[in-house]
Image 1 (cartoon, each protein chain N blue to C red):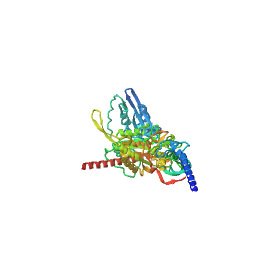
Image 2: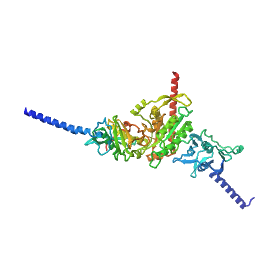
Image 3: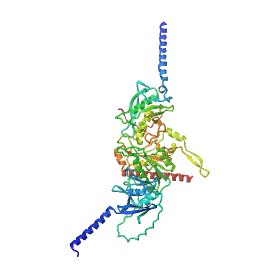
Image 4: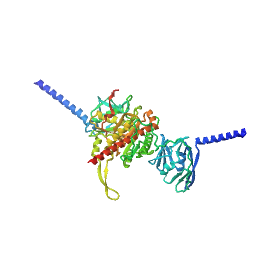
Length: 428
Length: 204
């Protein structure tokens, strides 16, 4: 039997050990990764955040000369030699140079710093890095360039953990979405070939700020934030390629935006905007498609597209359809109106609409788009309440969800028409 | 008999005087400045936006100008008297100047500081309205506001002057793509009364 003083010392020591263990588990414990490159070795600290090993984004950027920009609405753009990774806070999907990648865990903010999962090195950074980049989590190594290192032996299988309730993991991570819409979600099914590429055009940008709200919110930032969310949602859930007309602070002309859609043979063009009114209490979204007046319709009819045989590289020729730029959209006016109607239906109940809701008008950015095209004014930045609303993730997600639903419905409409046409052709 | 010849002489003299007045006053007036005298259908000359408006002093006509409706999405028709002008160019100039001069409590869709620099009308009936850069520089932006600005000009002319069938807005003498990035201004636009609310037309 121990004397009382010794027993007290033992209790004290045990308490200190327990406190230390508790502190480590709460605050997270650090791990040092070693970056091995032909130039030598350097260190990169990782920290356990919410039980996952993560790098501070600033440290990662410094280690690999990455440029990190966070927009006012929270999206983070990591760029390296013109290639980009777009991260959305609290979503475990990243856009890596246009491709959607599922991350081990979502980026998170702690102590005014952004943290990203260490696996981001392999999942997102390596594809844009230009030279070999390999993270070996077990041995806490990052290999950069043409270097070799022996692999750590596979860890021995751990004994079976005590039985604990295990929740089945979802089959596929999905971006966080707003509360489920009142209408049932559209059936996703197998991706259909009728829409394989969509160009989303975040309105304005660069020196063109667009509308500025009374609290200073800029239209160009709102359109960019929603465009990135929409891109993630479509690519992640439909597997359709989505291109943004701009991915940063570029100033683009209307024709450059349509040209991207035309040159990439996009099947849909959606231009995102936030609008203004001379009355500060006007609010709601409005969807526009191209409207033609009598003169424009006549000019379009006389300047209809024509097919021409043009020589091709390697000899021979092929038939190329020549469409006058200023009349490219005229062939799609009806389809664009259909898409606008579907967006209006999807917005109802989820995104407030203004008193007109749908309008056909001579809009410059739509004129040259050689595919169904709409311009969506998501709300009025001139209205202070709606300015606040437009900046929130919930509202942006509601817009994204509605646009996503409309795209799926539009795709289904095209499929139905295509099937009917095929059956009609087969019956002949 | 003598009395009859006296009457005839007096009648001839009166007729001669009337003819002389007609020749010297009416025809001469119509043949002076081309910008004002040419018939609306054939005029293709600029009307300087100066005080010399070519309007008839004291004579006015009623026209409908357009202000922003309470919903912020439409234009309300507002009746106003403007000086009568004997030709399309001068009358169009008077209408646009009146549109630019709308004041509170009406809300105008024309950005602050916008001035009319010149106005042209072609044989085809297309009016070219040359506005000062403020129309673009001071514009709040947004498709809705831009549509209201554009159609408050286009409809003010096409609704009041049947001789004008299309309107193209120029800025500082130059053709422009848009005022604020949305509405295609590269060709004359026709009347679109969808933006004008017939009900609720107000008279100040």
